[in-house]
Image: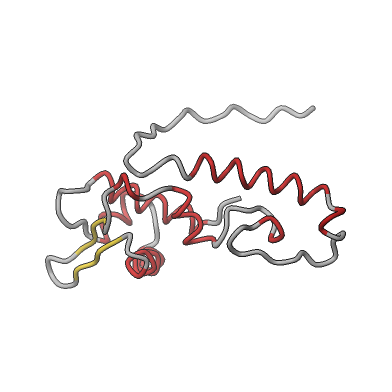
Length: 147
């Protein structure tokens, strides 16, 4: 699952992408439109600014804007920046690898083999989609059906 921080980061950057080229967007506007607590949003946008994805300008007329064109910001990069990895388990991470505790040896672990495939397929998708792509909301799923 994606953490709340990752979800907030994506929504904030999507908001900035929607306003790309229109000037600065104030923090309160982003927070209200995306239902993100302002203090948490400040932390997120500061991290994004340090990574170069966001520009911030202080002062009365200050605000935030994307630091790169939306076409140059991939969803995979946003997830890696905020989560550290696309992998669901640490032993399947390409950039934040850790040996799992209390697990089988890696050359015997079929779960790791499966999670490497999941990680690779996830990367293929998220690294092809940028903030410039039009992504439309979809209707909610109906109630879960027990089998």
